[in-house]
Structures are given as structure tokens and as C-alpha cells.
Length: 526
Image (cartoon, rainbow, N blue to C red; front, top):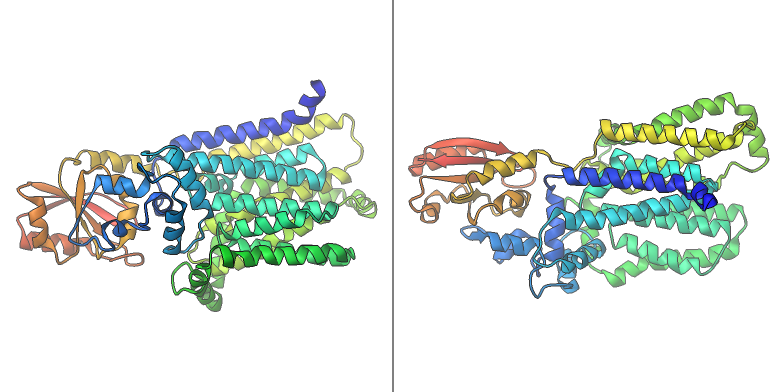
């Protein structure tokens, strides 16, 4: 028992700390990003990919009820485990369906329920599996429980890691499959086993069925392994590995042939958009600086450790060289780590919008790079008295840094302001509600959490003031949502909408309740 505790107490403590912090932030999550609501809708609505599809493709001049909104985001009676509907909805979207299938499975276990905990519960399980795979990967590379435990706490508590878990989207599964693929490749480098090649093919297929951006890390990782095998003259391994890896990628065409249309479509999130961004050289500096600025905050604790390690390596260069002569530097880790550093600028340049979620899946490998430096320090240090105590003290210091970083830089996607939005809307939930838009589903989706406070709402555009009077009846006031985003939707000017209402109706007084990126919400009265 004592030997068991000595081996596993450190990693168990790291996992418990990460789990507790993730649970704390999950409780603090008060709202959802528009893409998170799409996750619920695309997974759980029956052959209706978007809000407007609930009304036959157009919501203008129609009333959308609370029950219809609920039916869009929740699995209702008779709709459980409808994988065909999920598949259809994803053909209308720009992403493959694997994560949405999993989400629909979990939602089907809790029918007639719409809760953040459905998504957060699934993401938490996947996130902990990612940490387990990362731990196993680092153990394979460095054979040190302390270094592997340090990797778990550094990734598990960094801003980008926890943001991956808290965003109810496919990126958490994408990260798991990226780490799993790296682990399988490391297993191949340790000792070639032909039975691993079909697993690698399945992992590649699953990654591409989760998010197309998986292809970048998978491609460069496989290329690095091929180069490694050539240097080691492992030609038999390559004869197995290359066909299976290609088969995994090509099977995407069989399982989800719509990927061709999605990758070459002329949409914001598509291969066409990626090529446009690649060709616009003038935006390279801005994009690279954005991603660097966003990432450095998420990996601050890892950067602190890296600086300390580099200083230590400079002081111990003599012993470091002796470690190189003895072959203890674990250059196999570079096969896993270096592809992430190549993928980073590629994704920064071609991503559809500048958002760090597109690099979430390579963050564990930046942490693995830090662990590689820790390994080099470990083999470079001269013999110390009571090494067990020194290693545990270093791990405790790293854990403290990671916890401090989590305190100073909390993850994204918490949306604490949404609690205030809900409170404001609840005060007017008994009044009629009108949504002004040119039939765009994006702003309505973003406002879905607040719109569910109303029994129903009427959708019209900037020409439908008189038609809305029939819906309003003799009400003395109503809540108006105005679609204001020029980039994502109608781009209405609230002052023009309000003046038009005042000119054609008796509603001539307006009070702003709140405003988000896609809409402005007013209480309008006579």
C-alpha cells in the first residue's frame, strides 16, 4: 500500500485539483456563446439545423414559441438517439458530426432537459480523458511520474486548457484525439507493433470527423514520424504506417462525403475562406501577434517554468552535454512537440476568425515541450541527496504556479454578465416581445437563453412595424430585440428602428436594457 501511494499520490492529487477547479468554474458559467447554443440545436433538433428551420426556413412575420425554442435545443419525447437527424443537420452546417453524435447520446439520456450541465458533463469527462492520455504520453516519453504530473497540472489549469473544457463545443474532443494520436505514434517509436496502425487510422478518422482542423497536427505529426523512421531505417514500420494513416484520412470521404462541399464552400468557415486568408499576406503580422498575445496568457505558468528551466540548463551545460552523449535526452519527444510549433503559425494565418479555439488542440504539446525541458534538467543535474524530496518540492512549486495562474487568468466562456441579462428580461417576461431582423438565425440563436423567458416572440424586419401591431394588441409596452451586427447579420441601427416605430405607432418611448455583440434589447412603451 505504501509503495502504491508513493507511485500514484502525486498524479492523483494533480487530477483531483484540476477536477475541483474545473467544477468550480463550471458552477460560475452563467451563459453560452452562440456556437455553444448551436451545439445543442444541431445535436438535438429534429431535422432543423437552425432556428429559422423550425418555422420552415423563414421566421419573418411568424411567432416563435418557448416550446419551439425548447424543442430546438433539447431532446424531446420520441426524438432520442436520432443519429440520422444529427447527420442531416451537420450536412447543413460546416462541421463533421462525431461530437454532435456524442452530445445527442448524452442528451437522449436526459430527455426534455435543457441545461448547461449536459454539455459541461460531457466535456468534463472528455477533458479528464485528455489529461489521462497526456499523462500516459508524458510517462512514455520521460518515464517520470513527477514530470507527467507536472504536465497534467500545467495543462489542466492553464487558461486555454480550461477554456477548452468550458466551451461546449467539439474542440475538447478534438484535443483528446490529438493527444491520443500522439500517444499511439510514441508507442510505435518505442516498439513497432502492426496492430497499432489500425488504431492510428481510426484515430485519424475520428479526429477528422470531429473538426477539420485536426488535419494540420495529424499531417505534421505523421510526417515527423516518417522522417524519424527513415533516420532509424525502420522501413517495415513505414510500409505498415503510411497506408493505414492514408486510409484513415480517406475514409472520411466514405463516412461523411459532404466534407467535400464544406471544405470548398464559399463560406466564412470553409476551405475557400482559409485559402483567402492564406493569400492575404498583409494580415499575417496582425494574426500572428493576436494569437501570440492570447496564448501567452493561457500558458503563463508554463512560460515561467520554461524560463527557470532554460536558466538551469545554461548553468548545467556541461552535465547536459554528458547526458546527450549517453543518449538520455529523449529526442523522440521532438517528433510529438515540433509539429505543434509548425501548426501554430499555419492555423493563426488561415483560421476563419481570430480566436484561440482553433489552437486548443495543440496546447497540450506546448506543455509537453516544457516537460521535455524539465526532463533535460533532471538528467543534467548532478546527484542530489534525497532526490525524492527535491522532486516533490519542484512539483509543488509548479502546482502553486498553475493554481496562481488559474486565479489570475480565469478561463473564457463563463459569461457572468448573462445572469444580469436574465434578471433584466425576467422583469418584463409577461410583456410581448418582438425581434427585428432580416431573417438571420445567428442573433436569435445568441439571444435564445433570454428569449426563453417569454411565452413567445414575433419576428419582423425594419419594414414590419404596422404588422407587429396585431401581435402586440392593446399592450402598453413590449420588449424589442434589434439585430445590430453588420458582420454576422442585418446590421440595423437601433435609432432608426426606434424612430420608425415612433413615427408609425403610438410607441414613442424606449429604454435600453442591455446590448451584446449581435443585438440591442429595449423596452418600448407608449
